[in-house]
Length: 127
Image (tube, rainbow, N blue to C red):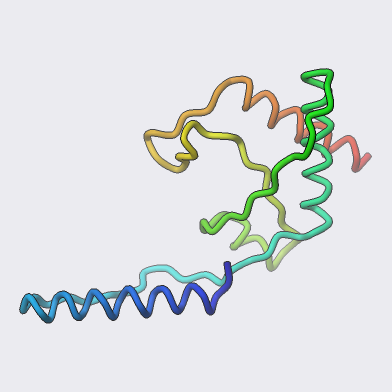
């Protein structure tokens, strides 16, 4: 969620790993290969994406979809690299079992369609 929380987890994980290795007389070395600061999505963009998702679901089903969920992502997305250039926001596509970025990832065509309709509704608000 934030840099200090991530640092605390890395510190605790490394500490436990070193102690486990020491007890087993095994050498281990924890090296960071990548580090990027946490990025908060722009509240305005997030609101617009939520509204666009609502509009898309209503268009698809013809019914009031109720509240559209808002997710927090702890993954290292392109948003982390782009945030110094522009505002960032994310629209997630539902994956079976919540598994993504894995060979086991699977999305339904209807969910891809809904995401595409949400992107279209988002762009319509910008015109």
